[in-house]
Amino acid sequence: MKITVDKFEKLRSKIVGREEALSMLKIWHYIGQKVVFTNGCFDLVHRGHVNYLSRASSLGDKMIIGLNTDQSVSRIKGPSRPLQDELSRAEVLASMFFVDAVVLFDEETPFELIDFLKPDILVKGSDYSIDKIVGADVVIANGGRVETMDFMEGYSSTNIINKIINTK
Image 1: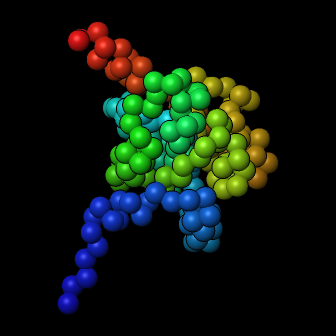
Image 2: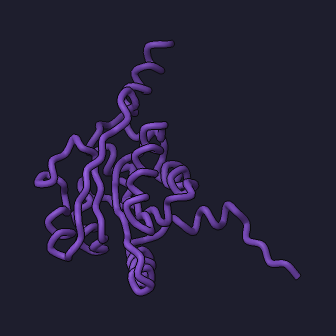
C-alpha cells in the first residue's frame, strides 16, 4: 500500500510556531546544516521577493522566514494594510520549494524571534546597514553572520499597489 501525503497538508506543515521552529533548527544543526533567517510583511509577493528569498536561501541549507502578523503589519504600514491576511501570506511563502519554515511574529521587529532561534545567517535587504539590522548583534554574538542583498530594481509591493490604484 502506497502512503501519500496531501500536498496542501505538506505546505501547511511548513507554517510553524516558535517552539516547533526551534526544534527544527536544532535537528538541522545536529546534522550539520546552516539555517538562514529573513523576515518581512510579504503583503503582495512579487518577482522581487522571489528573487531575494531564493538568493537568501542559497546562503545556507535551510530557510526560515519570520512573517509579520496582520496586527504587526497594520502597526508598521498603516490601517489599510495588510492587503492579504497572515494565513494567505504564510501559505504563499510556504509554497516556495526553498522555504523550509514560516513563523509568524506579532512584534514590530523580529528581535525576539531572532533571539529565540539564533539562526546561523541573518539576511536583510541592502537598504539596511548591518549595524541597523534588528537581531544582527544576537546572530554575530552566537557565531553567525549577517548578509545584505540588493533588491531587484522596479519591484515593490507599494509600486504594485499604486499601479492598481492608478488603473481604476
